[in-house]
Length: 71
Image (tube, rainbow, N blue to C red; front, side, top):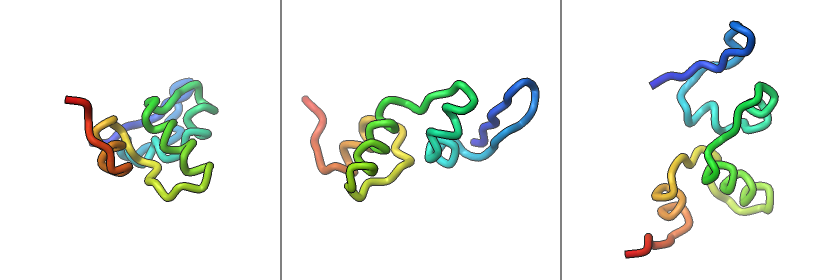
C-alpha cells in the first residue's frame, strides 16, 4: 500500500510505509514518529551496524538480528 504525509493540507511525502519510515528526520519535521522498532534499527545503523532502515516489526528485527522470539 501507499501512504501520504500531509502537512496543513499539503502532500509533503508519499510512498510505501517502508519508504517513508527510512527517513525519520523527515517525519519528525512534520510531527510524526517511526515505530519504536524502526527507531531502534536506525539507532543501530548510526552505531555502525549493517542493518536495514525499513524494519517495521519486532519479528522482522529478530530475523535481521538472528534472534529467536520468546516461546
